[in-house]
Length: 505
Image 1 (tube, rainbow, N blue to C red):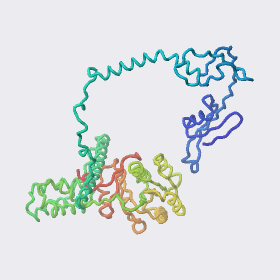
Image 2 (image 1 turned 60 degrees about the horizontal axis):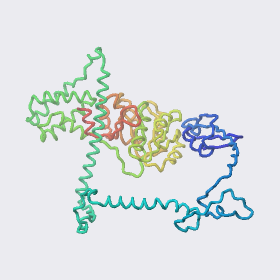
Image 3 (image 1 turned 90 degrees about the horizontal axis):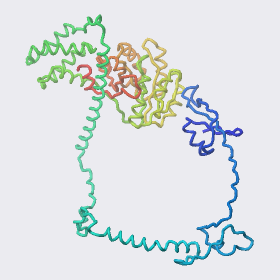
Image 4 (image 1 turned 135 degrees about the vertical axis):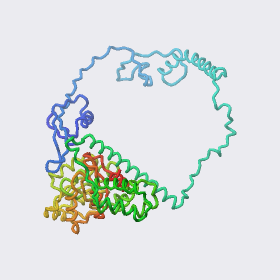
């Protein structure tokens, strides 16, 4: 806090007026007067990310003018803390006493060496006898059995109490086997998995409600979903019946075709739908023929989906790459909020975009204790990362790229080569056509090591078939699902069972 002095005023600077008032009162007193108040911004980078401050000028209080009080007329003065030597008899030579002589008490209760104290005891002596008698009467009344109420513990004889019964219990050591401990750990993982399911189910329910509210007009109602090709329908209805002969024909022609239509509408390619039904007929249906076809297909689809969201190292550096408009900055902010606020970890965030483009990420992560750095050139990356190297998690936002823009891919490759992240997540928006993301992923192959796929904008398009097909075909696990435009909400680890349920409810 800056403090200077000019004439009869002082200048104070702080974050707010409420922060400065206690210091002003403690230094200048409550009579100080604020004459001027100004607001400004200090610090920051290039005029951005500065800290707001308040500067006030305070006028020093004027010294008070004391008017001498006229002397009181001479009268008897008694000083109870004095020994009484100057109050009795004549004052010492060379001194003028302001107190009138105090006569010797006629009766002294005790000799304390001070006539004043002896006189006070003499005056209180008549009341002492009455107080002693009253105290004795009260004591006798309270000790009487007629005035005492019995207490619950009166019937117990504490002398016969066995104190060994009240000894503290020794905690037994953990003698569980490794198998029991593994089972408990598996239960905890299942609880975490169930939590992720509930989060994504709630997210999906909100998506469905939003889509029902924004239903298309009657002019668009004539548009029908793509039907299953005849060759695919014939393969699905005939092949299982020929192989086993145990599946009812009615079930083959109705349920399987209906499930296949649902998978095609979700965006799964024809080849993947055929492969899923083939696995169902060989691995699931012979052992769970009583289950509905939809449940059998959902189980096989969940087994094909690979997910991975955790890490085992001491520190984690996550780089987010993707096409323009895939939601990298918002997803980076969601990760910062999740790890810093929800997980209590120390988080650093680095933007590899220009300072003008990095402003959004700085604003989204403001106020949560995240160390924010900017490095828009490969030569600046090492310095920016070094400033947040002690953090538990480092989230890195990168500039967008396009498969048809070779310069954007070259720049992204140079930045990531200088960064050397632990993980590189490829963002695939659920609301857009998957073809641009698929083309960019193919262009990055061999140049940038993409580790995982992160699906964004789930709230804008709940159909995930094309995105899941991209994950299966590229053999990249899905890490997280991002939804909504809030930085502190809408991010959950991917779960294969939940994802299969979103494709085939």
